[in-house]
Image (tube, rainbow, N blue to C red; front, side, top):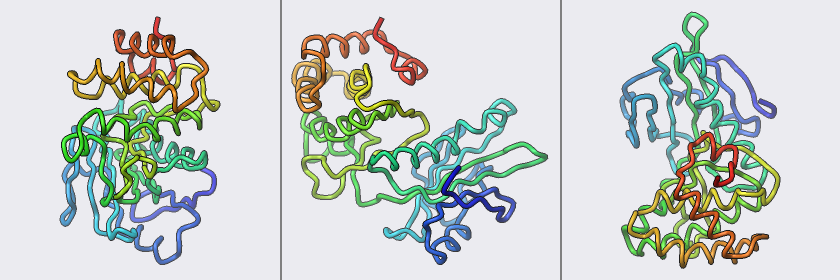
Length: 269
């Protein structure tokens, strides 16, 4: 973890961005929750809760007046052995994406707790983009599903141009800034599963498009293939003709590749 300050604080191993002001650094350290907790701390707002993931909004030292904490309590030996695949991976992927020029929430801290030498929980603290709106909310609000899919085009094209394989670039993980009706002012979240390749890597745009369509409402699939995919192809200046590109996307939709296959950018075979 280069360009990070590694410290021990209140029984936590912590990595902080080195460019944080001293005042903000101290406030962040005071804010860090215990990542091994199975229940949210007092005063937090629960945004998402699952068996091995807890996403909280905490009042804190960000511009918006709050921060987002994503916690991974690791309950069983297998998850503790594979602890690097959770908060640590997401934090490093966030940093790598920002270095390539991808708009993301600012990563503030990574932290983990040990017990008897084992990692029993890890977490990361990021900027809270509470004024932004994710595309899934737009599709059920002031605009329809197809129009909101158009708003996602700049984010998907940017991932392709930068060679970033975000494996879950669905509508709810693309946040749009207030007033950005064309989607050009965006941030992408949820970086646990991502890898980094050469710009415009083969099969990258096809996988991004197929996953976005797959995670959209089922009754929009035909319209997205016939109307939205040509817009994505045209705006990205893809090397393949449109019919070949669209056929690849359709084939990926048919076979439903696993997360591992999408990480490898496996062809639709």
